[in-house]
Amino acid sequence: NNLDTLYRQVIMDHYKNPRNRGTIEDEGSITVEMNNPTCGDRIDLQMKVEDGIVQDAKFEGEGCSISMASASMMTQTVTGKPVEDALKMSEIFSEMMLGKDIDEKEFNLDDMGDVQALQGVAKFPARIKCATLAWKAMEKGVDEEQ
Ligand code: FES
Ligand code: FES
Image 1 (cartoon, rainbow, N blue to C red):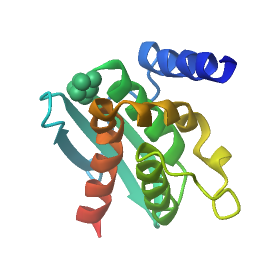
Image 2 (cartoon, protein in one colour; image 1 turned 45 degrees about the horizontal axis):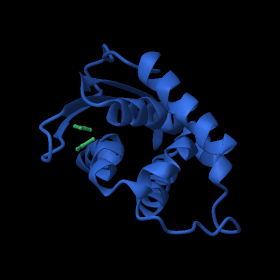
Image 3 (cartoon, rainbow, N blue to C red; image 1 turned 120 degrees about the vertical axis):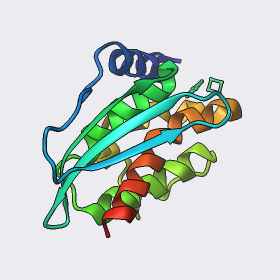
């Protein structure tokens, strides 16, 4: 349907024109490397966290379109957000990937921005790890920082 088509376009746009691809030139930034064990694809994520806020997030790496689009969307979505909110979003994203219905009274999916476009991935279990790779890297980075 139309929404699927729109979502596919959003995913392709993030894949072809990744947001926040690159590195942060700042010694105080967090660096996380994470692999998807099912395929060996890798993401290198860098984040700058200050005063409990994700000030900046950038990524490099090689992976399939879903993993790279998801990394682009994730960095775009968490930048400028409090760490707590970023972690909450990661939790919501995992639920989304499990195909759970998100209670919109509790969490407004619009807050996830373009990330919503990945909802359809839940139908393809083999690709869920592709979609969650960047989010897991973000969680790990934040954990190490605290
Ligand atoms: Fe990601 Fe197959 S493991 S597409
Ligand atoms: Fe490797 Fe998707 S196939 S991250």
